[in-house]
Figure 1 (cartoon, rainbow, N blue to C red):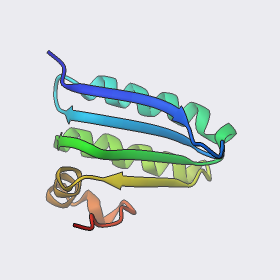
Figure 2: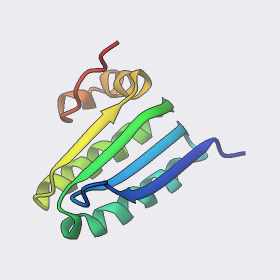
Figure 3: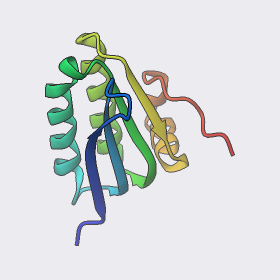
Length: 110
């Protein structure tokens, strides 16, 4: 059974597209996570900015970290500002894979 919930919504001010992810990004859910990021990417230019809400992600696989890094690279190529709000698990995966150096993710404040 998949343990991943994903919602895409507009920001209250209508100036950003928000991707809220909860659960685990692993081998079972990676394709769905990547597909949602591609869909957000396709709509991102019209929205103006993207917020990736990953504070409720309890596990991010190395492959998930790579998908996240590639998505952020594509957002930046398109000139779309992206803000990543990450959980400790996401930050840990980025640190372990070395991808944290490539992503602009603020640290979690306890």
